[in-house]
Length: 140
Image (cartoon, rainbow, N blue to C red; front, side):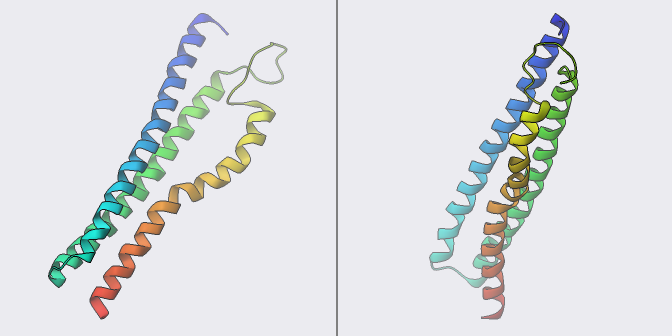
């Protein structure tokens, strides 16, 4: 790998790591917002207030799901860029391949499977809570 490729690799790796950090930071913020909004339903207010809180919670969870999917695509993009810079396994170079090779594929098969559920797990959980509250408020 030339010095120019090493610099490119380092920069792209930093972009990928930043996206992963931002993903988890956003995840924590959305969980906290949802957890902070749920106690509002335990206070004495009008029916319209409850419907507004539940509707906003549902919209927030939908937005959260969209952001998670887009972020996962960006992370996959950066990983593919990193893999394209790394030398192939067939080359006789002694190099450490982080985003390519048999070891990467074996380690990430299960993680990619979980990734799809990780993206939908918490937003889906809170979406069902808010949807259940909306249905309850409309029909009971």
